[in-house]
Image 1 (tube, rainbow, N blue to C red):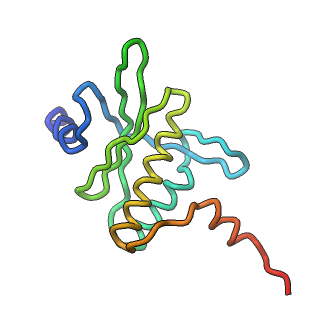
Image 2 (spheres, rainbow, N blue to C red):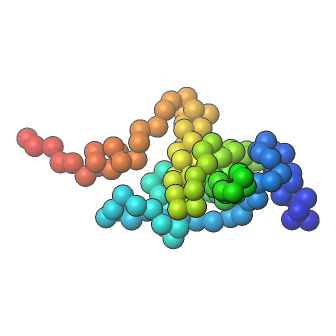
Amino acid sequence: MSELLLSHRHDELRIPPSVTLSACTMSYDDNSDSLSLDQPGQWEVEAEELCQVLGIGPPEYLLGSDQRGTHTAWGYAVRLEATYLAPRYWYTWENRHNAKEATAEELVRNIYKNYYNSQPEPPRKRAKKKGSHSRK
């Protein structure tokens, strides 16, 4: 049954059957600009918060690999309810965290476009505004 579901996902995502997908999570350390696979990145957090506000289920990220000659490229697809977003960018294994954050950003932009008819403000700019204090 999982093979059938996987092939259905490939059809939905319009990605080649050579790409394999699996669920995975990553993390963002607030004290550095680096990402790890343990905690969510800023765009991923934004996507989850938007889903909660809208009352829809959380997004599911699927790590995909595509064999390209002697190299393997890595990207993330995302499923939100019945909607799939295919990987837009492909990365080396060492930079796969960037793939997930790029996909989460694309998801946030999609949510804003479809639900709010606007564009999101980048999470880092919002965080700076929240943390800044105005002088009187």
